[in-house]
Image 1 (cartoon, rainbow, N blue to C red):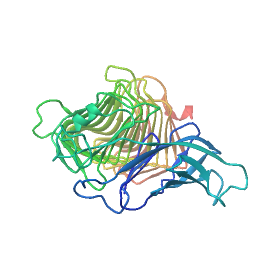
Image 2 (image 1 turned 45 degrees about the vertical axis):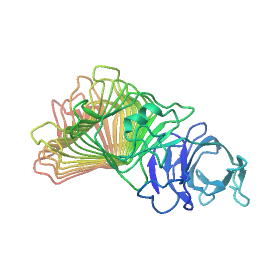
Image 3 (image 1 turned 120 degrees about the horizontal axis):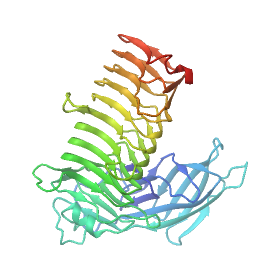
Length: 444
């Protein structure tokens, strides 16, 4: 089974091998597509070579109406139906089940499942998706079928349409990949994913043209399960939105993943970026529009290749960028862990340690840290740098421990740090350093 989190609808897939099941626990939202994508071949493992005549079917399940709001408990695909189980928020142990008949195309309630407190309602759309394949042993003259795959990923990029899925078989692809069209909100994203149980590698070794492994300049594109290595820039996202990158690895690059020129509404899930020279992840205007509405979940950025460089693990560049969320992200062995210059940014459950300078470096207004940890950093654990305008940073239930210079440092007295139920401990020098006459505390 292969799981990946995407903006978009639910997708289930099958071959001739049995039943597939998921337990995502993700929210269901009225009039919005569900956010978790499951790409699965039924059965315990995928075949290592294409199987002639193998039947593969993939479905998108779109939630058109859900009342009341709730979360998915399970989504199961069999030969004849799709079964969906969800739990209304606040319902405790009560689960609601619906079944979709693949023959008749009709949803029905499963008898005996209900929520006694209030009436529930579900309406959804199921669509079978076109699926294509790429393999190191393929041929771009082929139709892209599972037993007659294409040879290059870029050929698939130039063929597929909104809502299509491209599975890339395991192996190394020495090619640059760049988008030529995107998906849309009606038909769904275009999806490029490693074949379940295999790893597709996009390797820049020996590639003479282009400096980025993957360039995305069109909206509604999803990447899943890919390894990208040996490029100047691993992945570059520009002037587009609704891009999702999940369960992927980027390494041995100058720049890891960059978002620029108005990139918006993008999401990274369980992405590891390591052995980079200048940054792991960075979102900045780069001379264009400001980036906004980015979410990073369970991502890791670590190990700079040049300790003499000012290397950021996660950075939001200067400008008027806004509205970012980091959930459970981790960074270490870089110069600055989180370098935040975007307003209205929240970091939940994040951690920064063993950084050459600071764990959390804040430049913008209305940045909030909740349940975050910063420890064993050379300069500061939390640092408010002066950007020319007063700002407020809030830390709730955070731990700042064992910093070699300042646990918390506020550079200018016009700035304010609000700390609630935080622990400052250990370290070689100063716990809290307010700079300037009166310090920053007069505004708190």
